[in-house]
Amino acid sequence: MVLVREAVGLTLRASRTSQSRTLRDVARAARVSLGYLSEVERGQKEASSELLNAICAALGLSLSDLFSDVSIELASHESVVLSVVDAA
Amino acid sequence: MVLVREAVGLTLRASRTSQSRTLRDVARAARVSLGYLSEVERGQKEASSELLNAICAALGLSLSDLFSDVSIELASHESVVLSVVDAA
Image 1 (cartoon, rainbow over the protein chains, first blue to last red):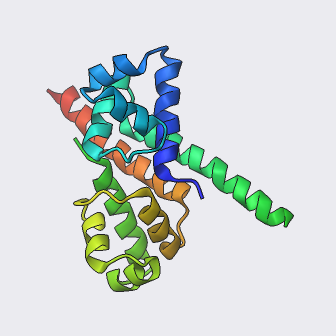
Image 2: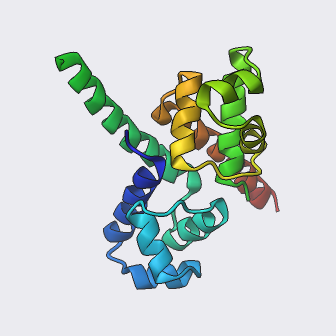
């Protein structure tokens, strides 16, 4: 089962790379450590709500847009699971 | 600024109450403590991704639907902020 922190990490990384920005740049703008941001992007750490606000602000991304994309990412995994169940 | 954990808590509580279920019932089904679920619903505790999966499963709610609703909840707060800024 896919985890929310993995979908959040993928979505944040996609937003950052679409802007051709480095981890270092976004971490500095969000005032979080580079290691923390890297772990969040890789889905290895749960971002606190406060730091998620800071990271989104650094990316110029609204929370509602982030979670709209997270919902789509989660749905794509859910449909894969349903396809596998249907095929079984 | 609204926090993601508050939007998640409101959305989880709305799902539970729309099913006329008690905190005790959902906490037992999700195998989390009643106090933990209550704190999550009130936006006082960040739910880990693993426990969010368990709570959603107990509610019969997909993660994608939860975060679609969370995104709408967040957007409603963002539009209020924009209205206040526009009016100033």
